[in-house]
Image 1: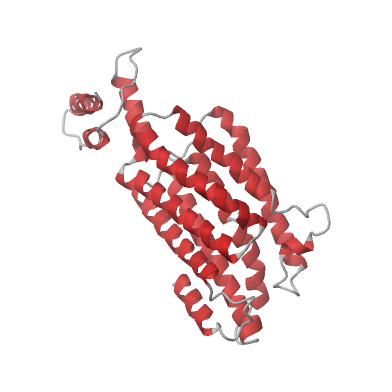
Image 2: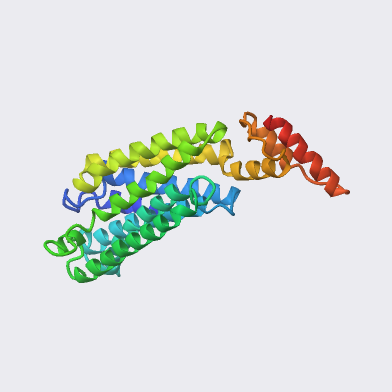
Length: 305
């Protein structure tokens, strides 16, 4: 509904807004598409696996991006295309800046926690706290900047801090995202079997997105925006395939069961039939559940071997 209202407003105002401000262009339309696809992927994952925070993080990122795009389009209608026709134009543009930045922290934590919703290891806790601090700082400075330009709502908050100690406001954000992406590399190096196969595609998509974000933050041009949006959609596709088709989020379940019922000291073999493993583990129980549960796990281990 929010996306539909955004598209309608952008179309109606396409000729009433200066070309430099219009949202009816490839860059803005690609942003709308990313907001929609991100929300859909996040909703599907969260509904299928509510205990995994990845789905909720992706859903939050898509929802925030959708709200930001709507606020921007609404403000243009209320303040430029038809001044006074809609209330709260300044408030909408004030909300645009923080909601437009918050999807980036969602992306960072998705990189840190993919695929099982956990950090790669205890050593990554300081990285998570550091990333959270940077994301909080960037969001707070955006809120302060948007407040300072309340009477001039279409002035970029980056211009508010230029020159000054916050002139490099946009640069800690991509640097922190790059640090979060290192977690994907760490998982890939330690992975094997099906997990490694799926992380291969996810790592490639994350790497392409990382390269695309460089011109996006430096130039903020329409071309760089479209390229970045295409990279984001590709990353979402790899997440959806890994989580929904190949059930990569269940890799921790398979490993924990195998370690619990496997022989002590025996190396965990390659998992070549994950569907059979998960089918055996999820088979509903019957009376006499202890024996039946043991048999289910035995069949799961047979599928692993």
